[in-house]
Image (cartoon, rainbow, N blue to C red):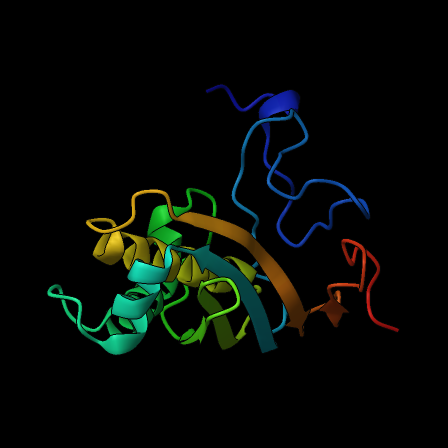
Length: 185
């Protein structure tokens, strides 16, 4: 691609306009965000998601009687592994080798199913929202894979960012009854 004004990446350290998409260059092409001049700060992100399943699959999930193994533990480890490899899976994400990822699996008989929550942390120049979201999604996909022999009708729902902290934009929490677009005061 030619290095013309409409295809040139933003200058190092230049900031996008507030509310603009950060993964586009001035010409509208996909571009990785340059974080080289940003200050490293403590950052944290929490994501959540749900797997709904049949009562029979729920029994295997909670009873640790699944022939493939302990669904919750395997899904938890798969989520952690995926969160650490997010930069290899999502094309414009940065690879964050020092990111810490944890995943909690909470069975919920009222669904029936399991709620997954992932927390990603780093002292770095970019956020870890994608790491938390990827960890939750893969944890739930892994649980689905391990239970699909008894329930192909399971659904994965509401994979969403719950909160983030750190960086220039500060804290953000999902608002009650809304999308939480406004930052926390």
